[in-house]
Amino acid sequence: MRRTNLALAALTLALPILGHAQAPDALHVRSWAAACANCHGTNGNAQPGNVALAGMGQSDIVQKMMDFKNGRRPATIMHQLAKGYSDEQIAAIAGYFAAQKKQ
Image (tube, helix red, strand yellow):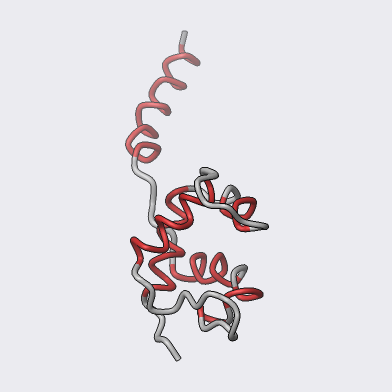
């Protein structure tokens, strides 16, 4: 009985923490975005022939990524990559690229 009460008390204390996801820190977001550099360039400034993400609107990037993730937009590899990120990670990565300056 006592063990059950302790477990219940621990769960009760943890619920507020579990219910509120913390926003990722800038270093995590930058490392997620670095995975895009092979095709989209460092900080989203792509070489000619690839889509530049730097300075693109965050909501535009999110919409395109969600379309890849959900199979609504054809792709060779982006649909596979997009499925590897949560919706929250996609939003954070999109925010990172939207904040970058176009070159």
